[in-house]
Image 1: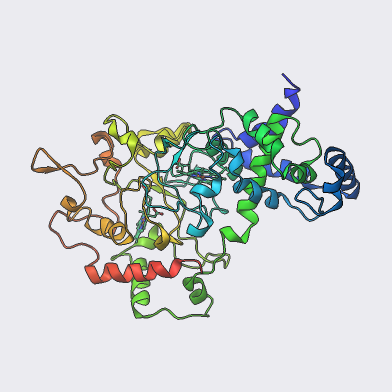
Image 2: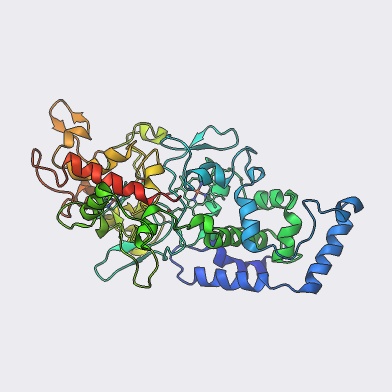
Length: 425
Ligand code: HEC
Ligand code: HEC
């Protein structure tokens, strides 16, 4: 084994063992020490790169020419779009997080397919990765409500740590080891630029290189305005530069009204305390009791069940039974551009997504199958012992079968008119 000691010391933070609160800060510190480079470094890089390239390539501004304005975020952007980092040679981060689809999946499939032959199914719908930069690490508030962390289940605490799964998962980019990823990275046409930004030896050692790759992706997702344009009609409205029409205004009121939609209780719509625009998520978790999605291949096995936070691999409080069935509140920015909704993609249009909240308890027969003729199999994507975790008290849930739902048909349409104002322009 090559000199592992140094990398173990430095790089463990980017691997970010769950529940290590210092992970994020260590990772960022490490990042800053690798971005400082001076003119001598650049010249040295240039000399070395020239040694390895044909002279002609160094004379004209080819893809490998040296520039001094490359940042870690620029490297991250190249990695994000690089299909050569997948074993199939056909999948990149952007395949599932399409920039043309608000960085979410570009299709209406319940799950995406990956793996060496692109024939291995995923198990969850692809979230939009916009507006994630303020995601706190997983924690619990004074009332014991979980919040924070990345993925639908909060399994990791940083962008850098998050990137490991897609690169290595057998049903995504399918590399067998970190080393396999780094080997591909060394062959990428932007490898010289990677070395220029992260240090001449940054690709030599597997763990260091992998950590830098994670940091580059993190910088890209944090720094690039692509991921947080705040360019929706609602942003213009909050800035006093646009008016909402009558339906949008009614929709906003219903969205905020604690006795009607009460959506803002989990998807805050008001300007934040520090004056920044709202994110439409408070990063908390809730169990919605969604219907099971038979289009997810894993669900063909009746004993397979996606329990969310309690089985996210996080130890301690997160793993308690009371967190089974809970998934993270996503932002509702760009929600009108989605073709599947919620973690299991069972609901296929925005109107049904909103109607589900208000009619889940009053008209359960619209959402769940019937067991043996009569009984409606409510919350059929969760084992019975976890049904107590499903939120049935908070508006807009609740009521008995046959009661009047919290929002009528016209009101649902108004909420949707409002949600459409959250699409980035
Ligand atoms: C095959 C499809 C696929 C590919 C390829 C893929 N992702 Fe994802 N991504 C997903 C899915 C599905 C989730 C949700 C996973 C979960 O909840 O367990 C996700 C979650 C995320 C999240 C967390 C979102 C949140 O709401 O917390 C980030 C960030 C992310 N991906 C970034 C990336 C990056 C960076 C890459 C490339 C290295 C990548 N993804 C490649 C499908 C994909
Ligand atoms: C008690 C908290 C809570 C309230 C109140 C709430 N939501 Fe949600 N919302 C969530 C959670 C948690 C999820 C993700 C659940 C999952 O994937 O299993 C979610 C997901 C969604 C989604 C799917 C987004 C996506 O990207 O797939 C939509 C749409 C949505 N909510 C709209 C609303 C609307 C409209 C209201 C008000 C009528 C509302 N929510 C009220 C917690 C809440």
